[in-house]
Amino acid sequence: MSAVEIAQILREAIGLDAESIGQVALARAILDRQTACGLTDPQAYCARVRSSKDELQALVEAVVVPETWFFRDPGAFDAISAVVRHGALPMATEPLRLLSVPSSTGEEPYSMAMALLDAGVPSARFQVDAMDVSLLALERAAAAVYGRNSFRGAGALGRDHHFEPVPRGRRVCQRVRRQVRFRHGNLLACPFAPNRDRFDVIFCRNLLIYFDRATQDRAIELLSALLKPEGLLFVGSSEGGLALSHGYVSAKLPMAFAFRRPQPARPARATSWRPVLVAVPDRPRPQPAPAAAIASPAAVAADGSAPAVSLDDARSLAGQSRLDEAAALCDDHLRAHGPSADAYCLLGVVHDAGGRADEAEACYRKALYLDPRHEEAVTHLALLVERRGAADEAKVLWSRARRLAAGGAR
Ligand SMILES: C[S@@+](CC[C@H](N)C(=O)[O-])C[C@H]1O[C@@H](n2cnc3c(N)ncnc32)[C@H](O)[C@@H]1O
Image 1: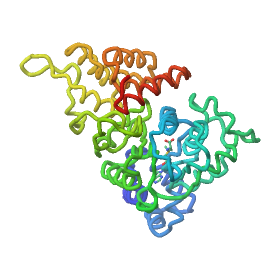
Image 2: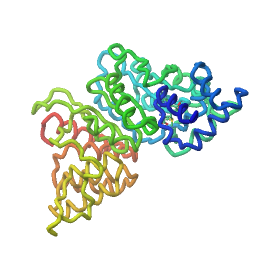
Image 3: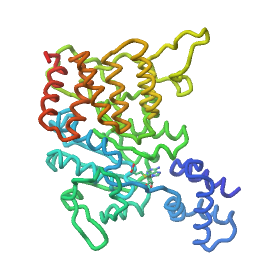
Image 4: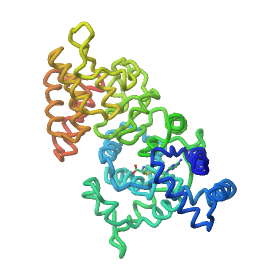
C-alpha cells in the first residue's frame, strides 16, 4: 500500500506517472531511500516523505531520469539558428528569450546558446533560462564539466570551440555559460510569472512522456501561458501529437519537432518577411483525428472501393512521429490522385524527419518542379541544403523563399 501512496505523492509533486518508469524501478528507488533513512517499515518511510521536504526531494532525485546530451535531436538546434538568422523571430527591440525546461544537467540549454552564438547572434541579444526539478542535475549543470556520454550522437561535431579541456572531461567555456541562467523549479508549480516571463522559444523535450494525460494537458497549458503568441514550442520526438491536440500547428521545420500557434491569415503582400513562422499560410485543416481514427494506408472501404486518401491524415501521422505510416499515405495519395506538389513536399518532410536526407531532397525538388511557387518546399529545401553545407545554393533558395513570402515573383 505504501508504494501506491508514494506513487501518488510523486504524481502530485512532480507529475510523475509511475508506469512511465516502471513499478520495479519505483520500488527500487523507494527501498534505497527507505534504507538510507535507516527505516525498516514502509509505512514509516511513507510518513517521512509526507512530513519532510528534504526527503521528498531526495526521493525525486532517485526517480527522475536525467538522460540528456549535447545537441540531442540536432534538427531543433538547426531550426533555432535558421529562424533567427533569417529573421523569423522578432528581435528588433527586446533580446530573444529562450527557455529550456527541463534542462537536466545543462547540455540542452548550453546547446541552445552555442547554436545561437554560432549563428552570429550577439550575446547581448539573447538569454537562455533553464529549469529542472533535480538539484543534483542543476549542480552538474552549474559545474558545466562533461564526459563522453554527453557527446554521444553527431550533433556536437564541429562545436569544439565552445569547450575547454579539464581533468575530468570538457568544460563549457565562459562565453556560453554566461548566456544561461539556471534555476531550481517544478514546471507544474508554475514558477515563472506568466505576464512577466514570456518566451520566444521554449524547449520542453522528453518530460511530457513521464506524465499521465491529465498532467500532460496541464503542462501544455502552463507552457502556453509562458510562450509569446508567435513563439515556438519544441517538444520531444514522440511528444508532437500532444502539441497538435492542443491546437498547435507544425512550424514546418524538418526534424525539429517544433510547433506554434496558428497565425492569422497574411495579407497578400506583406512588408516584412517571417519565413518559417508565418510565411507558409496554413491550409485550412481539421483537428487531427485521434490515432485510432486515422485509416491505415491499406484500409479498404466496406463496399470494396478504394480508400479515400487524405494528406491531412498523413500530416497528422507525421505530427505523431508515425513516419512510415505517413510516408505510405503520401505514396497512396500520389498513386490515387497523381503527382502533386503538396504530396511530394509532405513526403519530403517525412523523409527528412526520418533522417533520409537524399530522399527528402528529391521530394522537395519534385514539388518545386510541379509548383515552382511552393513556399513550404522552398523553405524546407533551403534548410536541408544549408544543413549539408551547400551555402551558395541555400542563399539562392532563401532569397527565393523571401520573395515568395512577400507575394512577389519567383
Ligand atoms: C530526460 S530529461 C530531459 C532533458 C532534456 N530536456 C532533453 O530532452 O535532453 C528529464 C528531466 O526532467 C526533469 N523533471 C521531471 N519532472 C519535472 C518537473 N515536474 N518539472 C521540472 N523538471 C522535471 C528531471 O529532473 C530530468 O532532469
